[in-house]
Image 1 (cartoon, rainbow, N blue to C red):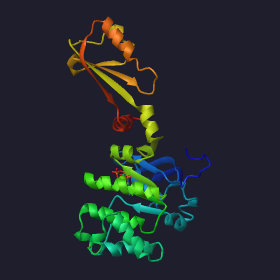
Image 2: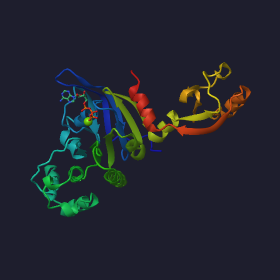
Image 3: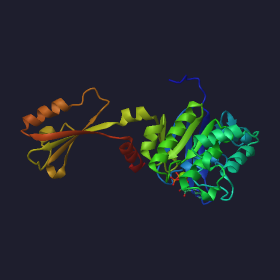
Image 4: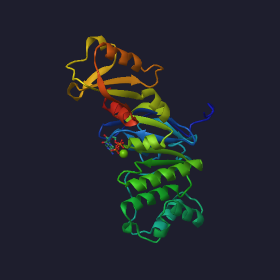
Length: 313
Ligand SMILES: Nc1ncnc2c1ncn2[C@@H]1O[C@H](COP(=O)(O)OP(=O)(O)OP(=O)(O)O)[C@@H](O)[C@H]1O
Ligand SMILES: [Mg+2]
């Protein structure tokens, strides 16, 4: 456990963003990110993920509320705050005719940092881009371009890295490489905030997950704790004889009929000490219901997420 006294490295307080169109994209977001963690912001299209990141990184202005990065107010103390932050934007923006090496080196210069060819080389090697260092960006594949964006974001040695959908549209192998890279970065002490639609990405990578929906953070939880709290298991019993309805004597169990009455699905809580399965099997025996097979399914974070985002407020 982290010491309680530890200050958040990103502290977001009651952030509201109303665009000129009158649309409110963030409705009072509070969020604290702790140093050294990997935080996944999960939410459907249009939830406000990019808006939130843009405000923290200073490319959009909040309507009200405040953000501290490393203790610096991102508006009043913009330069100090921004120097701590690396941003890999969702949209790729690069000069197509510039080389990989120059693009990444130039990015470092923008932050007023001294030239450091050894560092640039290491970043490019870590991202398997070094053999492309003299290629123009237009000569790279989409996945390579995305890696260049990451190299740019790392060029000024940020302590906090924002990755806005880093693995959108990249193949499975590159996605694994990126996860690996993010983990290595974290080992060097970098705090990482990533947005994603991919549940397995959050489940695989993140220490904590925040779910955002319609401009509101509706849940923040440690990934493992979320699984434990919301983890449900299902036991499916394949019946020898189909049932027309769940018998009244079994009403106290959470049962539903499936497969045209050929299966009974029992939902139970994995956090409870008793699953109720022994009692259920006894009650089934008493009711004369026989089954020829059974199987269990653990709900994944994906199911949980779908539940959360589909529930109307
Ligand atoms: N410049 C803008 N002007 C007006 N509305 C905007 C602007 N940018 C974003 N929005 C609106 O704000 C909402 C949140 O958009 P945002 O890009 O933050 O979502 P997102 O969670 O990043 O979605 P995605 O997963 O598709 O990237 C959307 O309804 C979007 O249409
Ligand atoms: Mg977005």
